[in-house]
Image (tube, rainbow, N blue to C red):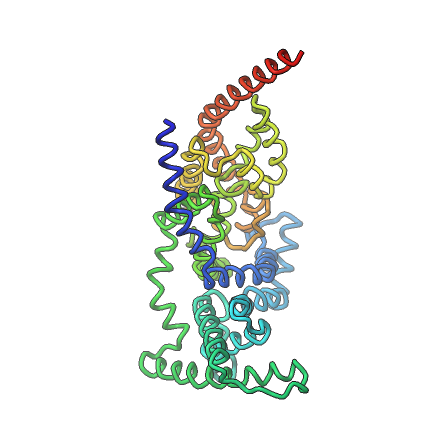
Length: 440
């Protein structure tokens, strides 16, 4: 048994950890992750407004409170929808600016100027004017990939020109703000002279502007991201990385966020049109069914540890139970430990995967309501799952089913690990007693 444990540990340390570490620290991965994090507050508030506009009641309800809410929403929908349109509806503004500002720090560029350059780049290709009006189609989910590409492109152009000293330099006496404005003048011209003609060329050849063409190319990939194999692969990679001590959730969510937001727009459009939302794998699904209590779905484990006979596990359980309620489980992961602990490898990796299968078919068979909102990842699972699904009750039941699965799978491995620790504690107590006897 020990030789197998040693082989597994050595493989993770020598093969998995270095590769995952390089991916996690890659500048584009970290910049995209930071961009989505910076946009998160706007998207959460915008999603909440959508839930408020479309309350979870039957259109023909006669219950006084529900009827009043529905009537109010219907009468003032145009006014109520404005905050949603200017938050979730223009999420690409926040994302493109955030990604570029984060990437700018890798090149020692001015984050504000770089963010504004990225925003202009996105608008240049994704904001056509029809009948004298600005078309907002690609300001939301459908424009996510365009926003990422233009943010990276514009920042790289800016960095390249500055590295080659192709810039306008003013005398030292000129205020710094004015100097920065002139420094970005040439990058602005280069972006306009490259992206605008390219957009016109693609439109003339295909009849589609750049974001429309990108979504057309990525449509099979976006569709595949909502499949069960894609879910299981994402969970497996996340768990393996975390087991090696690397924040796998940041890496996986950084990759999946563009797909989630593009798919979220589909569900929200369906909700607004009175149609059953079709997409399953969104951030709310990930946070509230697969990461209950944190990565590994360890909330039930924290409660079990708090009742353990082993002093060490009992202490960790008591300390980690409250943070786990809010999906923060680093004290449990490193205190138990689960990280690099071969005994806990199987449940840690496979509990979220089993939950993924159960939850996937629950939504696939329309037994559980679909996600239509972005929720804070720290929201306790049953509450967050209901909130994400427009306050439906079926996600609460699914959460408790997933937690029950976690208990069943974790329990035998916890008992085996607990037995090891009890033997170690007993041996330590004997050695301490012997030492006191000798001293006496």
